[in-house]
Length: 112
Image 1 (cartoon, rainbow, N blue to C red):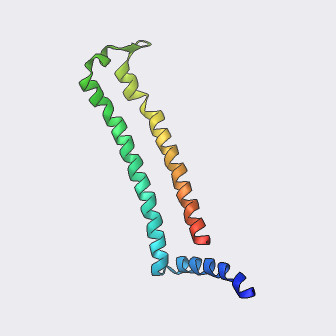
Image 2 (image 1 turned 30 degrees about the vertical axis):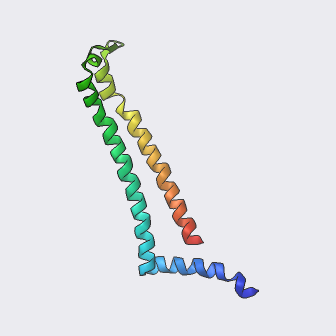
Image 3 (image 1 turned 120 degrees about the vertical axis):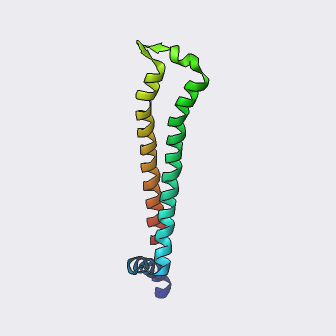
């Protein structure tokens, strides 16, 4: 009975030791974690690029938008000068939430 209870902490300890000593298993765990973080960053960066690059394309294909004014300012200037900031802030916040979730998942996996 005592041996059965001590198996879980030994497994956790082995995983932590493998991470600290940078064994091949530990390196693979870290590589997987970095891959997940990198994929998340690339996907959200592509989302930002698509959203921001779609505005000039929209202005090109719908030239009537350039005649619309809001509070005396033309709509394209508002969309290009003001709208990107909340969009970029939102994408940055979303990345932070996802990165923290990946970190929690990694720690939970190591502690199992």
